[in-house]
Every structure is written in C-alpha cells, then in structure tokens.
Length: 320
Image (cartoon, rainbow, N blue to C red; front, top):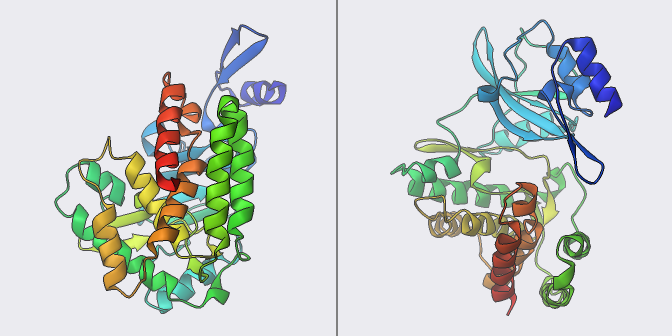
C-alpha cells in the first residue's frame, strides 16, 4: 500500500484513503495504479490519456488484467492488458483456418506494443448475455449459432490446445478446498456435494479441445454471425466442461436476462454434430456453480450470505 501511495504522489493522482475499524485501510484510485498492472499500463502514457476512463473499461480483474476500448486511427479496438500466452496468435489463426469463428488478434500500428498487451478488433453489438438482457429478438438465433460454433471447436484436434490436459478431479478438489473458507458452517453439505461430483467425474468422458471458460459473455454477436472470444483457459477436457459452464452461468443470470439461452444453445450444439451427455452435463453444471459460489461475496452484495445459500441449494439439487 505504501508503494501505491508513493506511486500516486509521483504521478499526480489523488487516492481516497479511509481508515476502517479493526485496523483495516481502504484505498481507492485509478486502475493505472494497480500494483500488478501499473508497469504494463505505463506504456500508454502519452498515447491516449482517456484510455482507462470508466466508460472505456469493459472488464477489470484487479491485479490480473484489464480490458478496455481504445480509439485508433483506423477505428476502435479492444486492448487486453495482463499476462499473455505467446502461442495465442498462432493458435487463433489455426482455428480460423479450420473454420472456427474466433476473434483474431491484431497489431494496430499507432498503439504501444509489449509482451503483456493484446489487441483485438471491435466486433459486433456486444456479447450474447447483453443481447439477451436487452430483449434482442436475435438472441435465440445467436445462442443457436454459439452452440454450433462450440461444437465445431470441440471437433478440432486436441493437440492444438495451448495448455496441458485438465484433470477434472484436481479442479474439483481445488474448488472444494477454497469454498470451505467462505462457508465454514456448510462443510458437511459441501463435503456431500464434492463426494457426489467426484463419483460422477471419475466415470470419465472423452476429452476434446475446450474453451475452458465458456459462457454467453464470451460470445460476440453481430447478427446473424458470432465470434468466440477469450481463450486464455483453453485446454483439453470433457466437452461438458464448456456446456456446463454455459448452462451454470445462464441459470445464475436468469434474474437479469429477459430470456434463457441454454435451450437454443444446446440445440445448436447438437444440430452441428455435438453430443450432449446429460449426466456429464449435470455434473459439470454443478462444478461451475461451485466455482461461482463466492461471487455474491466478491461483488460485495449486502445479501451475500442469503445468495450463497441460494446457490448451495441449486448445487445440491443438481447432484441429488
């Protein structure tokens, strides 16, 4: 914190510093002072002072990455600042050559270039989740197209994956251990859920090339076309890892979306040649609900305990 305060003073930024009970200190300031990202973002000094204004920031994961829209001479592009995989460019180009609709990287000439900056073209009218939330009449067709695109991804050779094969049981053990710290009074319930999921995941399923973090907000839409984005977690795993992720997020977003997307999505997946294993789909949907059990707490919801309990009920219903 002292280093952040000193950095702010050198750069002329104002920070809000609030002393809280229990010897805690709350510090709030601009993203450009992020303790892990400030070196990366320093490359934009002198290029575009408005790059990280609130309206331009699309996603911010503190200490990890920030995604923002930035204007160039050729039009708007998206910049993703944070750790990168050097193999990503060739991987996305290979998928495109094979017909998989993915968002390609680009290299705008009037922007800074470092190993921790990635640029992508601005595509379409937002993502599939946004389309569903604004009552877009094309959302159902876009969900169907997203399912077809995912089926095509799963049909590609597994050796293309930039990361090693994912072990479902390792992921489950890691998730269960982390969640116990959040809800210590639910150890028994979480233990039963973990045991049930471990039995289902140990039954095994064919492994394919998977996106690794698939949901409606990873699908960019420009009716009637779609592009899949954000392959940072791409690996080799059962296809239901992606399907369950989409379904879990769709279930959780039912309150804010005007329509559910999972039915059209799964229909598109199957019609494009993908196979849906119902048991595996239920298990992986539960795994991804477990992964998102702490979202109400992380988003500082004043009702996080009740919302966590609600998610636990959903999780238990899937594995009962």
